[in-house]
Image (cartoon, rainbow over all chains, first blue to last red; front, side):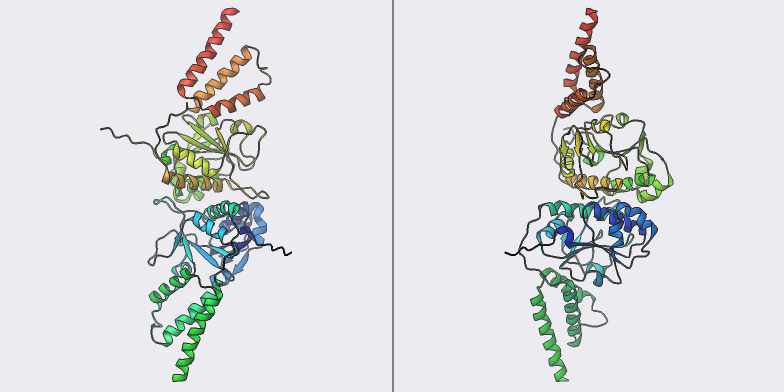
Length: 245
Length: 245
């Protein structure tokens, strides 16, 4: 008899804060997470950490703060993730697949073997377009249109609250996971290079086309094996190009 | 043709904070309210208000802060309310009717003509038993049992978030409202006096019996007319007692 211990929703969620300006907000976010049972905090280029203000606002959640992982890039922060949700208050030029906080939480609970990241942007400017394009889904917390300015820790609190509610009712599904995001990123780089090699893409202006393809593949959620096949195709193209020159 | 403009859920909700210690939390609560579209803040005996920390943390919600009503007592803060919800993290000796945040929000949205208060206690000790007994329902935000210590503004944020979600789908029901709480309070005082007059209640120890009757009548939600009848009965008893002596 084999006993398989699956990670709970609480183990599978990482909260990623990008370039937080006020260390107090990092502490308050750690507290918000811990009150809802979450402990995995990842900080991308925090302006100041560790910091006494962070510790003060963390209150009894100083363990979450002390165990926070600090990264140099969002890519590093997302290593190993199967699904990435970006919190966004603004509409964007290329509309991305959207979920409400409740839908995001339910999705996270239902995909019971997936490693999941929720990404929160800077206090004043949120996430850049590039950061949002690293996400499978955008999540918008419904807010007062005249004053949608949620505090960072307040947004973390709401998302962790919804995740906790969903976690209580989550069911275990034997679903097939998509490839982790870092493999997808390597595929995107490879694809872009091949499109440049075949002179389909102007290397000076890859923007619009690359973005649409990124959105397409994030939506398709290719599995590891799909990525292997796709990259095999790309490599074959490059090999053929080299032999022709 | 008559056009009746009913107050929206956003107009009917007041957020009551009792004896808040840290003015920063008052400001953060004002901000949390405004992001979700709520503006009516009531402060019962705040330790320090107005205060520069409150203004700083309110950010763009300084109008909510400036319009906050300051009261000397919870009774004053609840004047005109039809339903009162008390936020509580602890279990109590006499269990009161309970609702989840989501149920509280739905109830508030469904009773579309009611004036509603959500009452939040002190940062460290919450609401006293007496304060909780002024509420129709207790609302507990599900939290990590090992660290249930939500920041005051974080609790306000979650409740206002749930109210906003419910407000978006609220339907107008032509329901009959219960008597406002101040009329109920006068009835409780009257009832207790009569129970003492007839030597049913020991004036030194009214506690347990008075509390159970309070819970019963809060649950029954008597209308204005019911209260008039009940108080008529009490007055008749007193009149009869006086004529007998």
